[in-house]
Length: 227
Length: 227
DNA sequence: TAAATAGTGTCTGTGAGACACTATACA
DNA sequence: TGTATAGTGTCTCACAGACACTATTTA
Image (tube, rainbow over all chains, first blue to last red; front, side, top):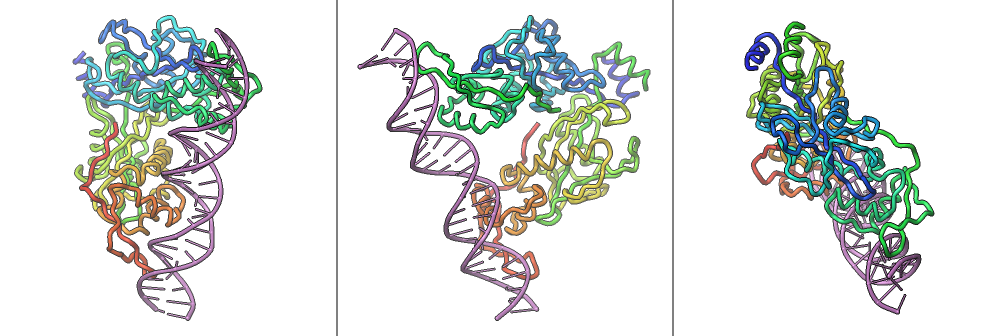
């Protein structure tokens, strides 16, 4: 191993391990947001929970690697990856005991109905301690996602599905931002999203009380692009 | 070369070339913003203008590599690097003819008086065509810097110096955002920056007309942190 | 009819943008 | 006094936050 590295240093330019780690979110039911994590099958941190991640191969694009991580580590079907974006790049040298590894963190929004044989799904606001520096990545990703909610159609539509009740929008916003929004203000926000339409339909979400207005997306789903 | 790569594929985990490319900005006189670029001494793109960049070495942190690029490629003194931050990570496989290379782009704000023997300085809004995909990186970085102006103290203070005239603030904002701000509105913005104080001093910037109010920073310079 | 839930109207404050008007300099 | 530049006051708009009040449902 160190022999190979020495050879590298002499014959080839410096190279680095680059991992792509994915914060994959999904709404099993509208309003709830869960993150896909998996127990590591291999050292380091074998048996510990971690974000799905892979080492970037030569010539691979970030979103390809992210998809590979989701398919390989969570068991997700690639067609269920509806939107992807960049969070940040992390460089703490001690983050991986195998040696210094750069980590490019991406977020991914999966279809609510996506199956993932290898994944454990935990609520975004109750993520248990993870391996590496993945706790920090999740925290940063949550911030990014909260900023994009109701602005980025690809992300938001993936988390709401084709239509959703207004009260589910309140829950969704609370999960991502950590604060419960005022219903009146959120309704104004929804009215300002151009791809959203308020329908005449009403939907019962709670056992009692007034049924909620149903909002629906105009267009078929689109993917969000980000490197 | 390809022999070494084959050895890698067999004996070592996948590794990638990672370059760190820096958009280094500096204000030689308050209000003007220039970017440091240099002619490439080595292939590829030998003789072409490009951003300073280096290949990330094993265990090196991004900001270390960025500093190394500034010192080695522009001839900047490390103490003149006042603030650093992340722009984004670029992954287009064709960006480097030597083969696929990931590029982590950082911005850096240098002291206005920094010397840089190897650098050519061009106005941020008139950057000539550059090698690789550096045009795109500059465009993205300009957007990031425009968003941070008057919000990120480290960046802004590096570009203004210890004190500056209000009319210079107008020029600075115009260079970064591409639009000339309304002087009245900008003065309100300045008044809301907590680390800034309006002084009684007046300073002549133009040949004719009323002298401008001078604003000064409270505290000694601080570095901006970003991975 | 009470309790639970959802929706609306409106007030406040903030920040950006626009623009007219005033102030201060030099020639 | 005219021109160039800088500074101020104020109006509008958009948006977020807060909150009281109304509406609709089940038990």
